[in-house]
Length: 415
Ligand SMILES: Cc1cc2nc3c(=O)[nH]c(=O)nc-3n(C[C@H](O)[C@H](O)[C@H](O)COP(=O)(O)OP(=O)(O)OC[C@H]3O[C@@H](n4cnc5c(N)ncnc54)[C@H](O)[C@@H]3O)c2cc1C
Image 1: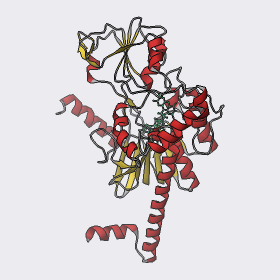
Image 2: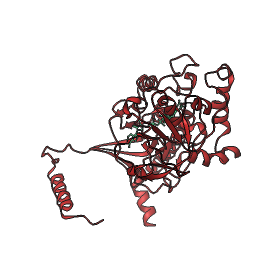
Image 3: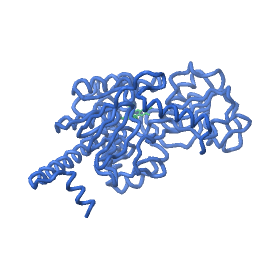
Image 4: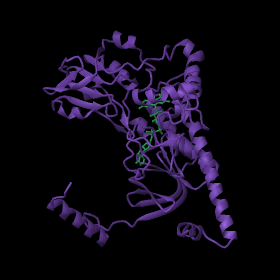
């Protein structure tokens, strides 16, 4: 789009200030701080900390960058009443069990504090409050930019789940302005809502849990496709005895993987439709008075229009419609049309030294879960260490022949 005169003047002014070494308020701009490392890890949730744990064991020089002010904030910022649906015995990552009775279900704040304690216990080099704004390449090294910080590394791990930015349909903008709209990632508790009905759009785990909570104070409709449910109570006697282990450790971790025919068959469905309900059952929703509604097709007269032609006169809409991975800051040609990078079990195709950990079904259904991420992290760090060894060996060989890496790559290009 062509820029107008005002935009051009603002840009020219900013460029002139940058040249003069001052920011928009005339204050001196801090100099660019550059650092060279073996590995940069982006994200300090369970995925990034697991990667850090294994990198530290290999003695590699690395840093873990995270946009949050405090480790665990992703969990702290989820809705107030959230409890994990996985029991504590499956909520610890490598090297440190979760400090709670094995069959209890921790709160989201306990999970956040656990992650913070984990980073402290293993002295992981986490830099909080550092939002990465650019990942590019200079020669065969990666360049990670965050404000005035610039990190250069041979290898980079993007360590985060797909759940980075709330997603809602474009027609959400057409809803009446007096309707309170929240994405599930912004929902905290019922006090945020207006009096009147609530439409929950999306019938996955977040949608079902929020619907159940709101049914105590509001009339609630829940629209969206049924994603199925695990056929037992997660806090029941049989679950504690063996069913949770059967589902989490056997089905989600060993059976549903990219290496099994059944895993490859269900993977596309899981990636696009979502997993089954784990804590809440359809029966609980019915009992609480939550009314099921068909898909939301659009907006009519400022109100949500359902697939069956009905218009719902609600005062609140909560979009439990999933997330975007939000990788717009990665400036490398690695993405498919769905915004997910092309990768083979976390190893990015065509970009040596770039990896992902934490993505949904990266290797198994459990890859995005607390108990599943460690296996992927260990495997990726093994690959990183092997690559390092190969590079070190190559540099030694070149040195013994009186050449440098630069000489050799220039000769290869010239040839
Ligand atoms: C509501 C909800 C409940 C869940 N409950 C469970 C459960 O009970 N049990 C279970 O096993 N799993 C559960 N999960 C799934 C999963 O365990 C969590 O989503 C978990 O937070 C994923 O951890 P992660 O480290 O992969 O990613 P995240 O927790 O999303 O962490 C990614 C980190 O990367 C940082 N980051 C992102 N972009 C940038 C950037 N550009 N620069 C710097 N830093 C950046 C973020 O600040 C964040 O700290 C749940 C998920 C949701 C959404």
